[in-house]
Amino acid sequence: MPVGTAGTVKAVTQDVLEELGAEIILGNTYHLYLRPGHEAIRRMGGLHKFISWPRAMLTDSGGFQVFSLSALRKVTDEGVEFRSHLDGSSHFFTPEHSIDIQIALGADICMAFDECTEYPAERSRAEESLRLTMAWARRSLDHFRAHQHEVPWFNEFGGKSQSLFGIVQGGMYRDLRRESAERLVGMDFDGYAIGGLSVGEPPEMTQEIIAEVLPLLPADKPRYVMGVGYPDQIERYARMGVDMMDCVLPTRAARHGLLFTSEGRMNIKGARYAEDQNPPDTACNCPVCRRYSRAYLRHLMQAHEALSGTLNSIHNLAYYLGVMERVRKSLQPESGVSGVS
Image 1 (tube, rainbow, N blue to C red):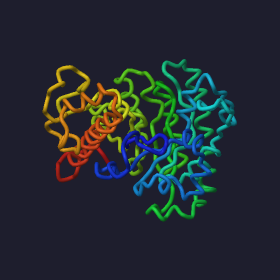
Image 2: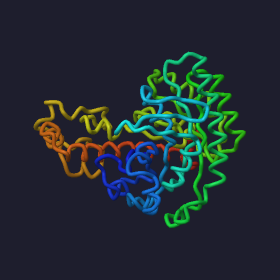
Image 3: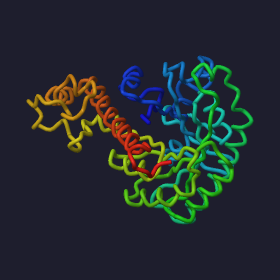
Image 4: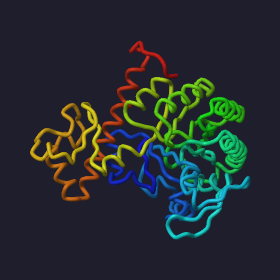
């Protein structure tokens, strides 16, 4: 799922995302709450209408962004007090408030408010984080069920109802992860996410945690790993049974000149590409590779042209979406390959 933090997948227009085949994008609760504000978006008909995106959308809970503001936040049982990174103003997020914001935004999939555990973390810290996340999951779910039908315009965009996913936490402690998964399944969410990964742990540890948790989550509901990863990783996780993933890498790397190709990662800023007339990826049929050369993309980077981030992002998103399309096709019943429900 391409990440559209502030109502935009950075540097890429919505019509291009549709052309590339993106079926669902992400919106960020924390950033949209601060600017332009969820009530303003509600008054304008919800996030789908506001950004002109007719397909599915998922909003995160804001928990990870609050987690990343460690120097600007205070966590209590009730919720999290934090200061805006924009102007220093004080705000308070509770599970109920996070759900209210996501309902107002009109996301197809909302996420329970959670407390993300950093890496490395002492066991006592992971236990406390798990305690909060489980309590907040219950409060998120109760509030969501009581208020989820408060967006009368939601069906204009093809959705039958909003859904809520619970988030498995527990740091890198397998028993805590198991406890978290089992308790969330007992609450009967619409889907389940594995959070608190890609926070600095080694890749092999990420995979171990996913392998530990996945069998505990219902195979007939979506299973979502948050914030991963490189193309080879997302392909591996999909074959393990993960249904959904998101990552900022395609667009973030693009803005720094890193392209993902069938031949590996390419730093388009390299001098070797100064007069290279080949497309970025000779095996790619995306709009960028059909039209532009490596030499031109390098020139745009060197000249600090805004178009550079756009073209690089379009290619990287096409590559990621292509990887997932290939995996989906290989896992169809007629292919004889199994592993994903």
